[in-house]
Length: 122
Image (cartoon, rainbow, N blue to C red):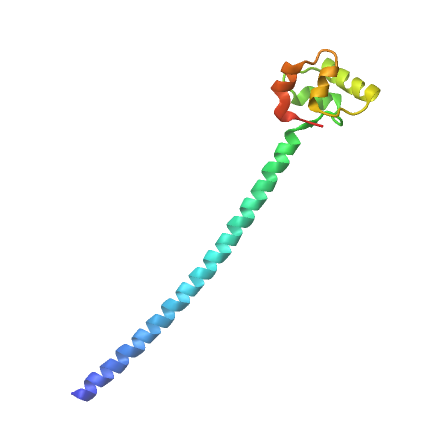
């Protein structure tokens, strides 16, 4: 009788050792997958942030380099005539040193600048 209990105990112990080893492997793989997933998410967030920044920069209009068409197209309350005045002023007096210097162009006031400030760069 003692021999039967001993055999069952050995059998049960082997099953437990196998189960612990199997679960340990599963947890280790799970941790590896988590690390890979975290790295992928971090990489994805980085790519998204760079894309958003690039889009924001693409939406900005550089008043020292933009063409008449680009100025007229991207700025609110702005037509081709005012765009031509900016380009003409830029050719005649050089680059703008600040966004506020747009007020030196006839027909452009502080209201226009404030309405478009988020889109303007120099």
